[in-house]
Amino acid sequence: MAATVTGISSMATRQILTELGSAFQNNTGQTISIESVGGVDAARRVRAGEAFDIVALADDAMRQLAADGLLKPESCTGFARSAMAVAIPA
Image (cartoon, rainbow, N blue to C red; front, side):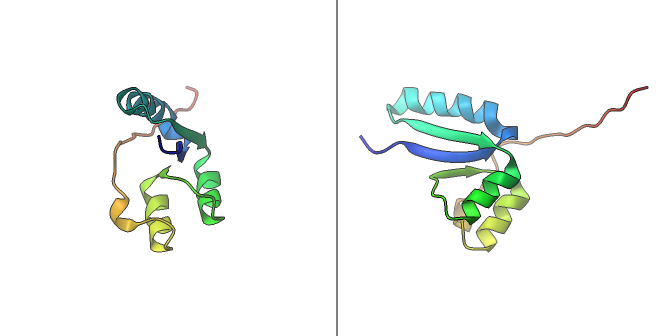
């Protein structure tokens, strides 16, 4: 069996990637480990040369990493949409 598939993501995708990773492991037997951290920190680590098999960040961060030659542009694709909201006390 091949080495563990490694990844890094922003905290925003932590839950969905945990679920997808579990399904992947159950279906393939392949071990997967995805670390969820702040998006800025994740992009910084990719820029620093840390190796990952999977990177899941906001679209703009992914496009910039690809433009800088750190990701294969053809491998970048959206997989989730996230609405944001702000609330203040009445």
